[in-house]
Structure formats: C-alpha cells, structure tokens
Image 1 (spheres, rainbow, N blue to C red):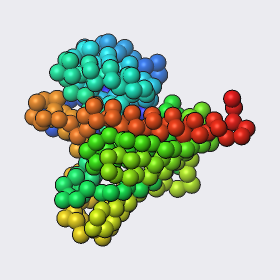
Image 2 (image 1 turned 60 degrees about the horizontal axis):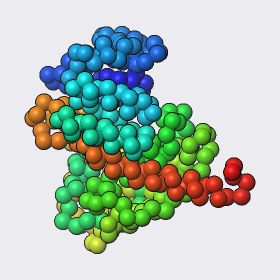
Image 3 (image 1 turned 180 degrees about the horizontal axis):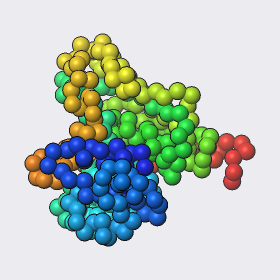
Image 4 (image 1 turned 180 degrees about the vertical axis):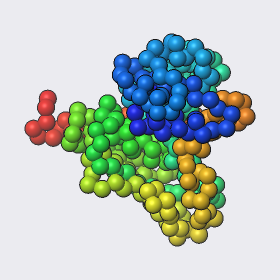
Length: 306
C-alpha cells in the first residue's frame, strides 16, 4: 500500500479482508502517516520505497495524484502489478509512459474508477440500447484533499470514464468552463461533450453546500436516473436493469470488488481488472481537455490575470 491518507486506509483494509492476500505493509514518504496507519493495521510501515518494493507482488497507489507516476513507475520497474487510484497520473505523458511500461513488462496496470462496478451491477453495460445523452452532477463539500489536481481530474473524471465506457469510443468535441474558489486549480467545472453519437453534459464542484452524485441517461425508449449516493435508480426506459443491484457485492462494496478484480488479474485468474490503465488514460485525456478549455475561458474573462 503506497499512501497513508483516507483512501490509503480504505484500500489497505480491503487487502486485509481479501482471501489469500497478505498486506505486506504501508509506504508513505517523509511523514509519520505510514507508521501510524501500519501500526493501526498490525503491519510494517515503510519510508524507503525500494525496500518496500523488494518483497511485494502488487501495489495500490493511493497517494496524491502528483505522486502517482513516480510510485507506479517504480513499482512497474520492480516487476510489481499496480492499481492506481484515479486519476492514473497528473499528465497524459506520464499516463502513456505507465501504460507502455506495464504492457512491455506484461504487468497489470489498473485504475480506481470503481463506479464501473456499480454500473455493472445495475446492468447498464448490458442493455440492448445505448444512451443518446448523459447528464451528470458530481459535487462534494470542500475537504482540502486532491488539491494538486483540478475538479475535472478529481471528480468529473468518474463520469467521463462511465460515458466513454458506455459509448465505446473517444470524445469528438469538448466545450467547458470553470472557476477557482479555493485553490490554484479549477474547483468547479462544467463540460459539454460529444462522444461518438452520444451527447454529454457534466457538472462537477468540490466546494458545494451538499454532496450530490447523480446521472440522467436518455435512451431512445426513455430515461434512467441514477443516484450514486442513495444507491438507487429510476428506470422509465423499460430496460432490463437490476433493481436490487444495491444488494449485490458490486453495489455494496464497489471498492472491494475493484480491488478483488485487480488481484485476480495479477494472479492470472482474470483477463483484466475492472478498469485498465489504457482506459484510465483515455478518461484522463478527456479530463485534461476539459481543463484546457475551461482554463482558456477563464483567462478570457475581464479582470482575469494575464
């Protein structure tokens, strides 16, 4: 486990609960967090990355996004399979380098877009129709976490990944806008995209009054509305969806399912993890495009810094 913050703790506990898996330890550079989290879990703590990588088979990277490339690249170079939390990397160049390294070495590179497990449990990847429009809102109260990346890479990227997976192809056009409210990177963003024949509109805010994570999918036959927080959906499209999805393993514990899929792929028991490094790279590319367009729009406003 690399990273001893909130998500690092979540991931570490999934490994502790996984059958046939031993949590070898927790690594975190330059802080006492690794030792504190490790002590609470009853495993060793490490501040030396090379020593940590010497005796492990798989690694989850749940550090700040700016450290994802450094940690994942070191692990891949050491012959270790990697699960990186989203975003896969902070830049597209680094994401491409990780994908290339993993593929050249025959190693599994997975990414933590765990909402895919929820969609799979609902049956949204297996419908006889494809959506023609998606509208998603994803907002959180301000937490101070993930400020090394924009809200597009922090929150919106989940919905971008789902849209790309549903459309089965890449984005053709991107329009976007955004605002800085807390830090040096966009804290609010809106985006309108065309992904193949699919139209999409996304709204993300990490400085909101209340958390909200909803998606409206319009199909030729009607509408499906999903509430990710309540784990409910409304199906007015007559699609064969699983109304009891919240009672499935994927619905109850998408992170645990995602970690288990990664472990199975690393063992050779499954063809792929829930989300591959290449798929995560594609979602990152669109999120970075949203950033670039939104930042350009911001710079054009009167009174914006030159």
